[in-house]
Image (cartoon, rainbow, N blue to C red; front, top):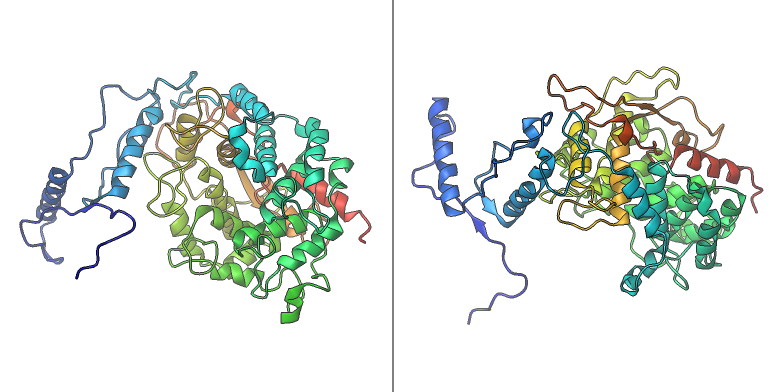
Length: 512
């Protein structure tokens, strides 16, 4: 008796009809082989017609053809994934062309709409106020909601130190006596909300914010998360992955905690003596056959985990050493490059997924780290960056400013999606990256210690462009000076000075 199929509905995969035998690879006459390929593509279109792009409205002046049409080279195989990709391109094209009714002027000479700064500032200020009852599901994300808003406002040039009292009042009751912060009142400590809390306290700054953290209890709690294989759990009894590793090393380095494990740390029973023991090797095992980096060994590569792993390696030491030693860089470059799509210009987080504004940070901010690994340590006064930008700054800038700005403020995944503070924060962080060259230097704000390298990053402003491009260039600037954002530290994703100030204050405190 046959067993009925159960579970998820099967994806529909359609293959082109093949009426003639496939030509041998060695066949000559390139023209004949091209005609046969066109014939096969036409057969595929007959099975599942490809929607036509509306061309009744011409793109604005200054928009390159690359961003106004679908890719000319197409796979004739039609799947659910390829259809979703086509639909996404169709939704994005009017915005990239500058002809969508929802877009607000003015547009610059490159056909790119201006950053709606005032609208985004108003949206983020509003996101720090009361939420309706329907948001109760985000109760465990209180520190994240504070971080996303403060980081977004900082990028837009707002002074967030005025929120110091409110931030301290919010975070005081969610700190646990056993160390770390929970996501909300009465919740267990977890690396993710603790990371967001520490970054938020760094941004508002000041003695009251810095002394709020019980550093000794934090050290002991993190010691309980360290694992014998070099990794970290995200909470006691929780999963271990690169998020936990990155969050832990951000917390340890900003708070200047000792690298030696507490005496009662379970990992000590397995011969592990420091927080960094075996960590780089664990991160290396997370690189997949594709070249990307997964949450844990043996799982799928993902853009956010790639950033966490690379930033963690850069906290551990100089990128030209840690990344080159522990990653297959050519394979990593291939995977990262494949995450940027045309004509959209934005990034996807995984293979065969759609572009999403948040990956402007998660994937986009991998590039300064990899480029620093290839360029090596630079003179702080006169850097010579032999390796420039390895991605299309023009494409990412166009996607963010043309497709991700919501009409009433805030930024979003893509056209048709709702804006939120998460996408607003990380999409703006990605836009900031396109406006600066970050590089690793021989000068640090930390005079000595294990985190000297993490505080040795500097940046150069990339000039805005108010002139029409005379020839195509993936490294072209298509933003105006009025769209300029603040520069963020490439490892900590907060202003450079905020990170340096928290570390400096903590390093001056007597350790108990």
